[in-house]
Amino acid sequence: MLQTTNLNIFYGDSHVVRDVSLLIPEGKIVCLMGRNGVGKTTVMKTLMGLLPARSGRISFGGEDITSLRPYSRARSGIGYAPQGREIIPSLTVEENILIGLEAKPNASRVIPPRIFELFPVLKTMLQRRGGDLSGGQQQQLSIARALASEPKMLLLDEPTEGIQPSIIKEIVHAIKKLKEQGGLSILVVEQFVSFVRGAGDYFYIMEKGAIAAEGAIPNLSDDLIRKHLAV
Ligand SMILES: Nc1ncnc2c1ncn2[C@@H]1O[C@H](COP(=O)(O)OP(=O)(O)OP(=O)(O)O)[C@@H](O)[C@H]1O
Ligand SMILES: [Mg+2]
Image 1 (cartoon, protein in one colour):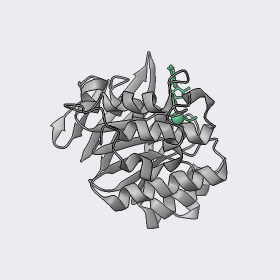
Image 2 (tube, protein in one colour):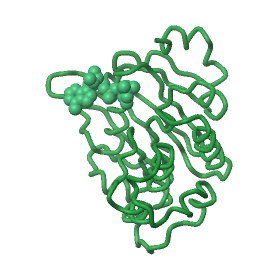
Image 3 (cartoon, helix red, strand yellow):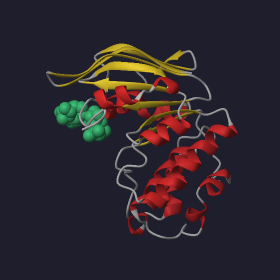
Image 4 (cartoon, protein in one colour):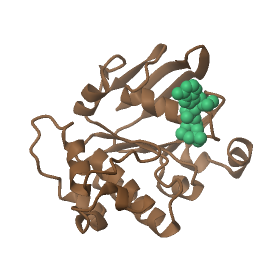
C-alpha cells in the first residue's frame, strides 16, 4: 500500500534520514521505533509531504507520490496525527474534526459515525474548545481529525506519548478496533512496547537516521529492545 525506497532527508547540511525503505501493506499495523532524535518524526513528515526528500521514492497504492503536496496526499487517502497532537485550541472539537473532512474528495460535511464509536467522549464534547480538553482527549481528537476523511492510510506519531494510562488504554483499543474493521493501513511511531507487541504486525527500528533492525512482531526480542530502545 505505502512504500518508501531509499529515502534520504536533510535539514540544511544535516543528513538526518539515511536510505530508509519501509513497506506498509494493506490492513497491517507497522511500528516505527527508536530512541529520541533518530529521525522517526522526520520520516513521518516526509511521508505526509511536509518535508522534502533529498532522494528516494514514496509510492502509495502504486502511484508515485514523492513530489505531491501535503494536501494532495491527504486527498489521495493519507491521514496524519502528528506528534504533539497539533489540534487547534481556539476551535471547538467539532470544528477541529471538520478540518480533517476538508481532505475528503467531494466532501460532505458529515463526520463519519464510526469516529464517535471509537471515541465516544468526543461526541459529548463537540462544542468544547479543543484547548480545554485533557492531553489524552486532544490525542483522541487528533486521531479523529485524521480519520474524518476516511483515509486508507493512517500515520500516527507517538499517540500514547505523555498520556495517562487509562486513556492510553482507550487509544490502544481504538487502534486495534480500526485494524479489525479492516481496509486501513497504519504506520505508528511508538515507544510503548506492550502496544507494539499486542497490536503490531511488523516493526522497524531506527538508529541514527537508518533502519537498524526490522521484522515481524514475534521477532521483536528483548535483546533488540535492550540494544536499540532502552535508555
Ligand atoms: N527543524 C529541524 N531543523 C534541524 N534539525 C532538526 C529539525 N527537526 C529535527 N531535527 C533533528 O533531526 C533529528 C531527528 O529528529 P526527529 O524529530 O525526526 O526525531 P524523532 O526520532 O522523532 O525523536 P523523538 O523520539 O524525540 O520524537 C534530531 O537530531 C533533531 O535534532
Ligand atoms: Mg518524534
